[in-house]
Length: 225
Ligand SMILES: O=C(CO)[C@H](O)[C@H](O)COP(=O)(O)O
Image (tube, rainbow, N blue to C red; front, side, top):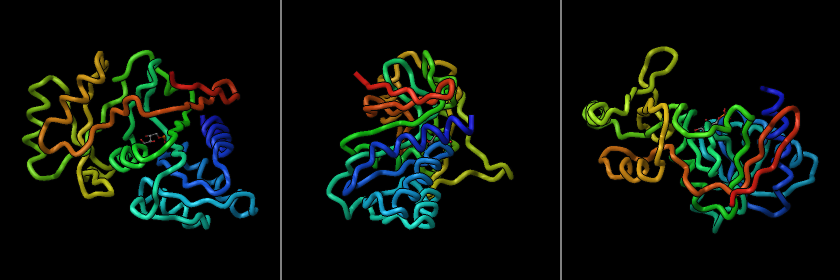
């Protein structure tokens, strides 16, 4: 799996051209994309500016000498390359396994092109087996969890390995919904967007243009309709 992630992460850098402003995603697959991008910049093959989607990616990019700007400092992003947790046949996705989906969604929404890089395990027939992350405001989060429980969404506030409350880069919490299957992602997205306290849900709908899938040692390119 690790070698598939590396293969797909490295292959995605072919979509980055000289002079572009590039959104850098978060996670173990995006890690390899950033690594390869750093190598190409160091060799003098690429001259780009990047906007990062998390503190972790920013630290990695800085350590590799990738020039960074804040989203407010750029006009638009040419391409954003990011990982995903689940992708269905309609190219709808779940993100936020790493708890970075709020910033990832903002960056993606200001991008001309969005590319997801995944290994084949992320391609599913229906979304929902992967718990759906919600970034929530700490104020009243237990009340929100109760409402989600009453709706039958099986919420679980995310904890760190040490059992502490997981906090995002924005000092919010994550509630994961254990839904098993999501029959109507658009309806669910609308419902979740209307609940006070939820800053952003991890449903990424109609956002991706190209999916690069690592499968059987190859990188498959899928274009969203
Ligand atoms: O959405 C994300 C972080 O918020 C990641 O892109 C997603 O979790 C995939 O990560 P990985 O490539 O490590 O499986």
